[in-house]
Length: 429
Image (cartoon, rainbow, N blue to C red):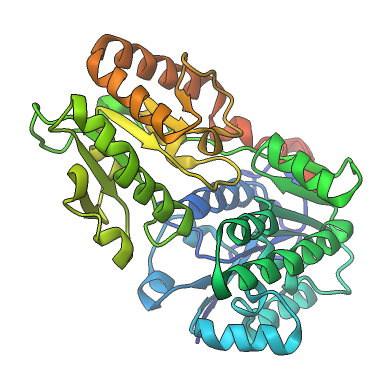
């Protein structure tokens, strides 16, 4: 079922005086509705789409998890030239069978849709599309083979490497499934990158990893970092949730049905918290994020762990935390949860995997812990020294505002999408 709407706000080739670029139109493909910006992938896609919509008329094709998400209103939605939002209803088991029969990654069959393909083909045929911007590898399957314009592929992370990591740490049937997914995705990523004009990754480290996996170092593989909305993540404008001042609060935030997050909180609750509570017996480990799995829920009450689930405003919980932890064992790219906590002037203890790609210094802007024992020791030390914790958080917030503004991160999109600036007098002609 699809929601398809055409808004003829911009006719083909029209110039909007608010858009000082000479360009036709852009087709934006995303695996999730890019609003609201309330989870990692949607944060990045939202800000990129918003930036592109200021440059040129944009047509959007994407998936929604349910009808409520498909129908959700947002100011970016109203700026689109047209949109196709398709509810993703295919069961995982069906996508798995299809993947086995067709020899494809499940990541592709899960996001296969005749409705999306029909919208893409029609838009490319009927509109003056000069650039297709693809957000997330699953959506590259929709690029028409005959399209002669520019293709910008935002892989964000090296997904095939993530599944290889899952396979390396897994067992039983899932080990085989993850190994197969990683192998097939690696070939797919290679083929897509060879055809794209630019392939983007969220950090220099991810871009370099991808170059090494290709066996060559093409110049069209670039990094496009994430940023922070500082008007929103403003520690001075947020009231913290009420809490017991005598109970130290350690906070983890994230989508809690995402495997790396599940493994992170399980490890911290089971292994780090007993060490921390030897010196801080009342410390609480608070887990905030939507869709906690049954495995996550079992942690509630164990070693001071508290499961909160989905909240309306994550900033209130960040404001209340004494220390924010990011103990991920498997991580790709840049962790928005770490950037957001640092922007809120909070001391952060992160694993080396979670800290990867963030342009910050250990023991100056955050603390990078190599082991569970290091994590527990770093947290306990910060709880013992509030002055150091405040200093660390203040330095983190200052760094974020210096290096991580979205406008700075996205300024290279003009080059990647092949846009040419024109003057207002030229536009009037």
